[in-house]
Image (cartoon, rainbow over all chains, first blue to last red; front, side):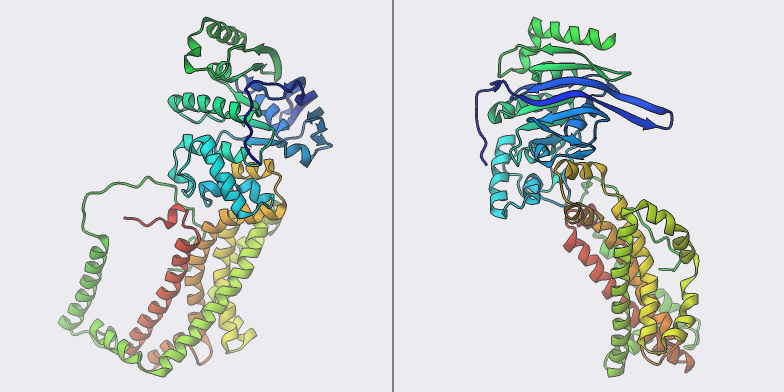
Length: 270
Length: 276
């Protein structure tokens, strides 16, 4: 396993993830709540897709269904052409194509950073020396070289989240799923992490699906934004973001950036 | 430690280390307090001519204790009490961790067993000691059983609490990685519950000694508890105090071992941080 480098934004034209009438209803004491109306949506290979919307719009539900953490109550989800959910049971081959990054870094406090990063490899029975080697490469990729032997509590929030991205990448999945990964970070760290994430994405040529409620984060990162709206949760609109890569933070001064952001804001308010 | 101390403890929240100026080390304060206490005791006994039968001076107690250290019988009784404590603690660990883990994993089982757990909790277990003596005889078996029964509850309850307290986010990480049931136990639930188990062990080891000694009070002819009763019956209060001192030292050794395990087993945990 090595980190491949490929020009960013190159899309194989294939479909990485396909939602086909995939929806989710939750049963609550007040009756059935529709978290996500049956939805059709394709994530293209190599693409950076952002699911944007206010809370309760089903964006996290959508991501968690793709990640294999929650079963859809209707429709199907295909990952690399394989049906992920067959009658509430996950297809483990399809699952292995994806790495998940949560809002909290969720590093295990009893493991050093390198052991946290290599945990997925340990579960897969990879030898210790190979795990060490891989953890070192990944620390370099996410910019935390030198912290391999530290414990999570010794790292700042931003660095912990870098480590959790490294963990999700450790087994070289084709797809990276991120659920508001920088939501718990301060604004300055968040900007820096957005730049870093763009670089990591360009260096590894993964398909990324990221959930956020930040409009500027969405426009900065995404090739395509799926705008979701609540009650009931559904995709309202899909917006293409055409800026060249790599984007600098200053891209937000671009009039077209403003235009897209304003458009999204209008749609979110109505 | 009394028997009705709450036996489930929460694990302390993380606190940022405070930077302190140069201060007198706290152990100097502790030693000063001890010296003051013993000094006050000695002074009181001498000044008011308190009978040796009621309260011997600490100097006499220490002397008697020191002298007893050279008697082989002292060490024989120590060994018996230590053995009962260790065996009782061992069985409490085996059953406590196993049942605690099952209760922690299965809310249904916990709900079902909860009335019984509460019922056995509120029974003053030392009241069962005569019964155990009747059932298991005057040998060490009855003491081992008592030590095990007393230590079992804090270990079981803390283990169950620890398994229930595994963070949801950590579980989701393993779920997204498709970990097996066994991997979930070895990689997450056990290490995550370990600080709680150790807290239960700290409480349990102290209760084990109490159990062994109370058992010796009531039956048999061996062990430090029995030695204490003999000294009491011969009105040798000084020797009784010496036995109590010896028992405390034994208790301290056991407790220190379990506390030492914390630093060794969970160096990552806040509770194992060396406070400066």
